[in-house]
Length: 103
Image 1 (cartoon, helix red, strand yellow):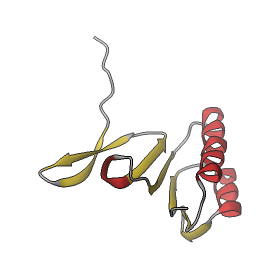
Image 2 (cartoon, rainbow, N blue to C red):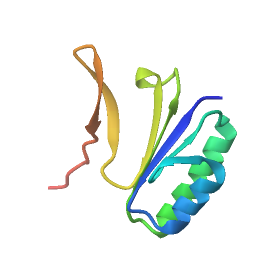
Image 3 (spheres, rainbow, N blue to C red):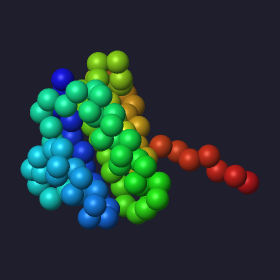
Image 4 (cartoon, one colour):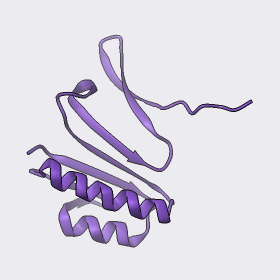
């Protein structure tokens, strides 16, 4: 069961209250769980995603260890701007995901 970190920015109070009930708030809007199972992580994310659909303000980023993902890190996000992990000159960097532009 890997460490999970969730960071919120400018979200409604109910998001923060929910996260405080399942994780430890180590700094304002930064939540950690040292041993969160994949099932609990998925259910927690589903609640956040459903709430964010109805109240799409702010952003939420979740990071966890995942050896099958780029750099061994799983990354999920709600809100703007979305990011992706890419390898550049042997280093892993986060960059803004490009949105399709309509002409």
